[in-house]
Length: 503
Ligand code: NAD
Image (cartoon, rainbow, N blue to C red):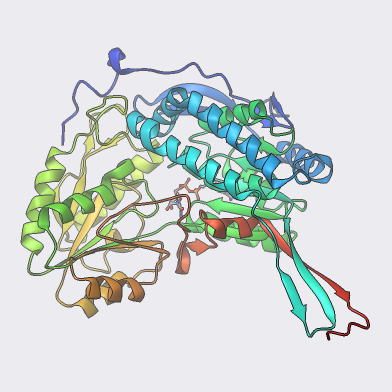
């Protein structure tokens, strides 16, 4: 772990700040000011300086965007064209992202504190893959023929659900944008997306590229703004047919309530987690420590499926603990544009303060702080990789989602104990198992109530892996063919068969 070094702060040789080209609402194919004329600041988490002022969408802007999306749904070619034609336009969209990848990666680095090279070689290429995956699916969406008691010919039609509202968070602005937008475009929906107020920049750039690719006006509208105003206007809107949300449990609950109180729109939620990684005695200590650190330090722990609870079997607990501390101390925290950096700044000041306050809780509750625990420097939102040992399952650092680089290390004796502890959470998004014994791996993977289980790997995500939560981690699945169903309605069409000699 570096202490604040020359790579953090105002070392101009490392700054590659792109000019901000798009800072207005994107509605019906045009960049426009908000009706009120209000704007808000988006802040660079490396320097705490203002990057740009962004038009601030509110209820009246969401109304206009929904109107545009409704008109596009009712009369534009998008829902009516063949899946193949939609797929071709989506492929073009993917190509344009590829051509602009460095600028987009830089936008996510300055807006969200993402490592530039990870954004460039992994996250945005991953987002492109998501778009291409659903472009390929667009002409494979079909219903079934049904044989109904022999007297009817019946079939199902899979139809786009209509106008969709997407509300997304700040931790993965590019990949979550496409996790939502790509399947809903593929099925022929039209949409209004609200990016998080912390990270509007890449979403607006994507809106521009969507237009260049040939997506008709009104199909994809992007309205930056705040949750209680623009976000709430989406979840309570009477003319939005489905809302797809990624974010916190608290806001997910408000969205469900707003949907229930308005037009009973379909709701899907991707919420947080407190995911366990279970390391068994037969694991390779070095590799297990690498996985545990990847699981909690990747994207500075701002990952909904981070391995924030690490359970280690008693036979190798001390060795794993030692290895983790050694590796965490060598972990490089620094400017996200510096290729040596392994961890950039937290996304915003709220997040910085929230994480530091959980660390203080952990100390007060009596967990042993093995390493880390402090803010790095006085400019930018950098935090040391932090590991607590001797954590009890009822401590706040073991129950709450911290969403930062803070690991809670716990010891277990038996497989039964590991399963019980892993499931001792209100969440159920992901889990990891490290063992060479496939019996153990298979038993544990079936016993854990979570939407994805990683065996001897962690954070392995693919466009085709359904992703979502059990319990309070959410409702519905993003990614994979499953996600198409969030944006589809099934219609049964029935016709009688008269006088058939074959009945
Ligand atoms: P958040 O829930 O506060 O905000 C997420 C989005 O919801 C933002 O766009 C915000 O403006 C909007 N919002 C806020 N209040 C709203 C309201 N009343 N009505 C409608 N929209 C509203 O979450 P956050 O702090 O931005 O993100 C971190 C949380 O998101 C963490 O808990 C994390 O686990 C979760 N998350 C989950 C996943 C997943 O896939 N399950 C992925 C990323 C983040």
